[in-house]
Length: 336
Image (cartoon, rainbow, N blue to C red; front, side, top):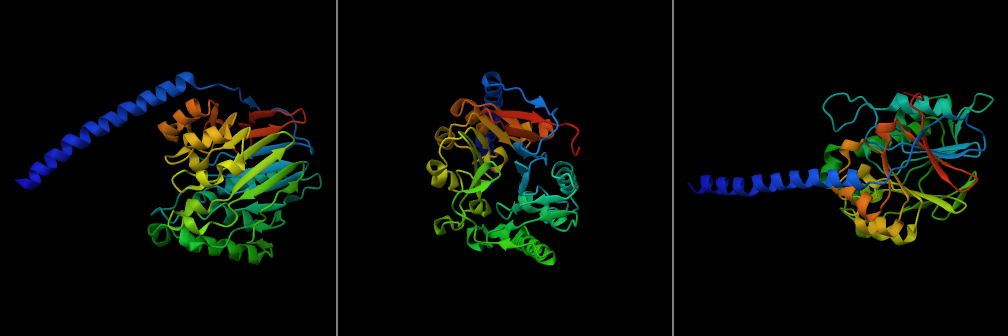
């Protein structure tokens, strides 16, 4: 009798609560769509020039892969979801070939050589570095160096280490680098450095000890990109829940473009973070329907900024013009 009564009480509490959350989500999305600012994303039409300064946000569904291009130089930040995520029981269709094809189409020099000045793995999760194996083992792609922090096991939740195969993934990447004699930099630069016409700065190059047990996202390396008066912050999986937003918001400062942290999931893009960075444009590596309602709300009412899901445009390119503008375009035909 007591168990049945407890189940009834739990049902009376949980069902109305879930219904209220569902209604709130609908209202949040409706209001967000009603008041969201709109900015046109034009179709990529111009022939790329060696002097272009652009950030390519590739469409790898709800995973991260970002190609930096500046004055004829290229670098890759994360490589998207791979084809064999150990968290899944069966083979998973990832984006390895899409990423490799995109790089070969975009980065080829006049002599046909394809070179990335560097690659950066922002942290150890498969949806960020799972695609590196295919990239690092492709003999047609030359890579100058690779930035990967040491494997900092102290940040992980226990289930991440036990069930997600992250150490094996990390070790495979190091083996791939060694097999091709690609220099590995595990001490990341913590001061700004030039990359073509861009100035880059890595943040969270050493994970603070105070983030112990906060989860693998707490190891994320953010990248601040600047050209003249314009700037972008590529937030990897910076979130409020793992405390990176609170630690680095002031150091990041105001930016023109934000690559939202953690794919727009719950715990990311807090009101305080958005109000500190005050982005004018937001790119989310995900599809519109998977961005959490509260995050959409924050984009619209805390940042008052238009946001774009890479999946819905088959990738987005942010061009930093010499006139001091950031222009968004997309190319439905490239690596599709």
